[in-house]
Length: 509
Image (tube, rainbow, N blue to C red; front, side):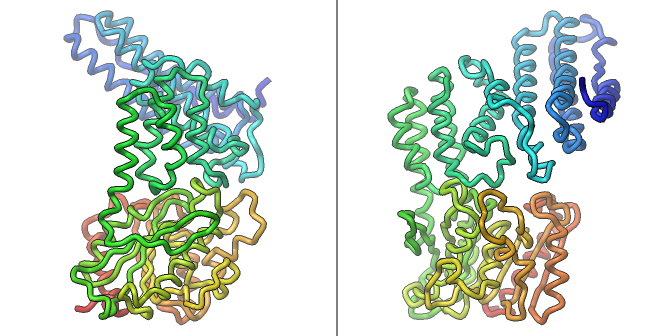
């Protein structure tokens, strides 16, 4: 018997279906309009209903995903049935509609709702405050995806591809697959390849997702991260067209680095080489030291690559600074945690000063610029008093001379929730504010759902009680990436950056 406390949600859902689950198909006849119009009407009605269902799920996410499995399934079943009924009614009323269209929409809906079911365990864990696991069988995910891998014809459906890709992400989490996936401390990129290779699937399906593994993720990870999968793919993939795409993608990952003036190793640890991607101003004379502008990319300490900062590097060299973007160890590639990534950031800044003469930079003019988790690395590097605690023994300082922060996480205490044996407040800026920080320019979005605006406010209020130079702006109505910013807001950020650079000696007027 379903617990009575969960009845409220299905009742609310039933009311939702009464309002949104109806179509106008009953009011039409097969002769009321040309067949092409009926096809368009079906597609529009389908799209509108999917949008309404998605909005309902988003608005009620915690209420939907936090109950036990039975009431959760009842909600997803009901939502899926509203779509099935709509599509089938059009098929019944308009017999001339191509049955392939009906079949396509039903398949898209089926895998969209399978993806919701795949999401259940990690969201249950999330909404329990990471304290409880969903009460599901050990083969829950396999049961959800049963029968999904032996029909290559399914590859034509967008929702099928999205569903399978998420399933592969789940499998890559190994023992943590029933947990919230954000903080899984494993080499998930290699695990993901292995998950595809080990699927009990039609060869065409496996070949497709191996190809996708490269062509999609090459924009997220540095090319060295694919060495393991690349050697295996050339042996395992049978589709010659896909093999060519894999080779071309891998080579592109190498070729895109030609935009940098130089790439130098700044650290080798545990057999991993970490590189500095260096950009010099035109006609750079290394005997005439210039300011350095360092970039740390975002990606939740789990994904990302220096190439994300290449455009910013080009902008910096046009203003006369030597620009450098850095590799650092990332969770999804190496299974490392945030503290390890902080260690690499400290090493990178110290390396720049150690090699200042060879780079042609002024070691007293080191600006560090970061976005999201990269902003955290930039900021935390200015707050750590003892780099030795992070395995950094350089005699050169790892503290920046100025900071530019975008969408910075200021309080990460408790975030790194797996296998952590240290107090994460030691790498959480909010708890480390002191009186000797470099000048800081910070921007934050008030509707940021990835890094809460409340974190920014707490840090801003705390640092304004010190003598440190902290200039900041926050923006209403935009998200983490400042998407939706007005021209006025974009211009303000550009102007503030320019004023900050001039004031602190990083740009000559």
